[in-house]
Length: 292
Ligand SMILES: *[C@@H]1O[C@H](CO)[C@@H](O)[C@H](O)[C@H]1NC(C)=O
Ligand SMILES: *[C@@H]1O[C@H](CO)[C@@H](O)[C@H](O)[C@H]1NC(C)=O
Image 1 (cartoon, rainbow, N blue to C red):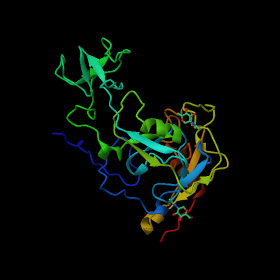
Image 2 (cartoon, rainbow, N blue to C red):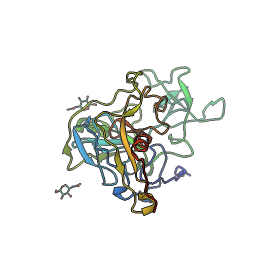
Image 3 (cartoon, rainbow, N blue to C red):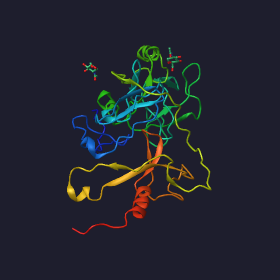
Image 4 (cartoon, rainbow, N blue to C red):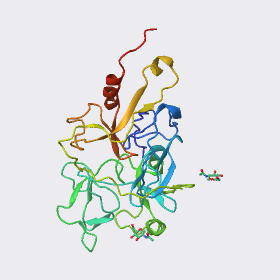
């Protein structure tokens, strides 16, 4: 009998990490809007802003071919006119796509099989010839989620999965089942954004871009330290934290190197930011704290 994937149900406040699985019945908890600063992106690859998942801040709608979906669409919503295509993916333990159907020794397989398996594990073809026969050696053990495995991916798991933004033409092609790799995989198309507003266009940030190393890590020029508002608890308000976007992050792949120890990357703004950068400035300017 088939069972559903075991759900490792870890619910984080606000942001969900893409690869974790969430049962659809649990609600996404959002912090009150004033608790986190909005970092409205300066520009979007899609050219559109939409309200973020918690409704507090503007974020970018996702451009064609970008990652989207995830639980509660935390990995993004596609731009107007696009669709977020999620599908059950069947891969091998070596992370290659399984190819179905495949033929082996005269038999046709639509699912992973233990036929002549040398390790008793279920396997699939990763490459076939023109006659759909598996090419010698082009096979590997299947991962969970594949057809034939104890836990098969089905419609109920699509909710948790990330997808790719596709256009109407591509959607029609996928729905017609002409993708040879997996003709019968469960799939889903989420409508793109509605009521998107115009954002300036920009290209995605280039990973690995390096800045002049002779400069030291600091708040970017023209950037002020902005408060990240607290939840109204006075004891917290007393130490209102501020943050700024940074410049001169020497090594973007290792941003804390020669920089503040808690440097973080803002996905929405495509920039590094830090609280500590502002604390340093504050220490210099606060000379006297009145005793109560
Ligand atoms: C739709 O998507 C397909 C596949 O990504 C692409 O080849 C095609 O050019 C797109 N069509 C339009 C009208 O953008
Ligand atoms: C889009 O805007 C219209 C009118 O402003 C509103 O009635 C509708 O609910 C909005 N749709 C979404 C999905 O926000």
